[in-house]
Image 1 (cartoon, rainbow, N blue to C red):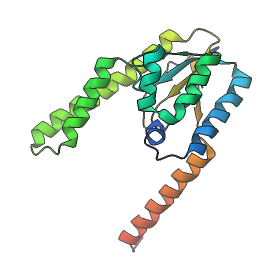
Image 2: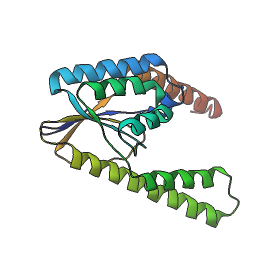
Image 3: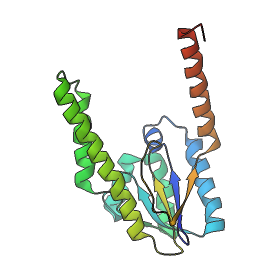
Length: 194
């Protein structure tokens, strides 16, 4: 939850994994329960922000169907209760970063072209993160709480006066620990002298 000294934002990460079905439904339930617990102490969520969301209202909900179908019903319930769905991103920046990703996914042969595409993508993604921070800063009023659904590796820098509460469900944490242990075990097999 995000909370500006007086404001709050919950940051819910790993939305890409949820949207792709790589994360079980129980993780979404744990996120919902965690946010509801935070609402009891911080107050109701007033704004819902979602990575790659550049529409609001009915069009925004349709876009959420594509971006994060498993979390959509929870987000919709928040919006029917106390929150509004906020335009979180600039459509042109989202489309630019997607186009750069498409370019990179083709398997470019030229190192020069690869560097141009990689730098272009990084620049577009950085601008997206700066825009998200700006939108949240301009949207939240004193005393309001908001929730941001965004991927784990985001680099959004929130203003100092916004308190940030990260939501990490226990089952997701267990999955991350298991993956980390498997990677360490695999690295140990490659390097038996360690």
